Length: 131
Image 1: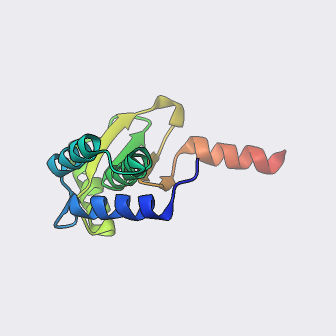
Image 2 (image 1 turned 45 degrees about the vertical axis):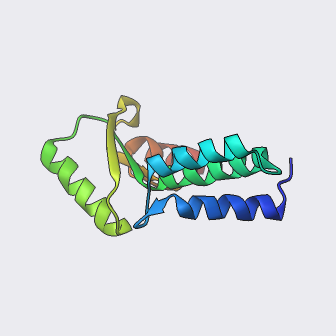
């Protein structure tokens, strides 16, 4: 379903209201959703849908997922967290998970950015070049 320009503009304005010093304020998001749900302005379903998409994108931008083949030590975790925060210029919520299927190396995902330094990715590239 296509969203109108007015609904898209309204959702962006509501999203800006939810930012506090450049970070998303969960309390404001809840208040905005409640207020829009109660007042039910024209196209409120489309407004809330677009608003939810903006909030989802912002949450993903603030989250870093680090996958490794083996458990990482605390010093490496701290170095990765500091390096990612420095690269993106903001503090990130870094989550570390172990995925043995990577075989070695790490994969880092921040929002839509993905850095894959895993052995599995290298083997996949090699396999596709041979085929």
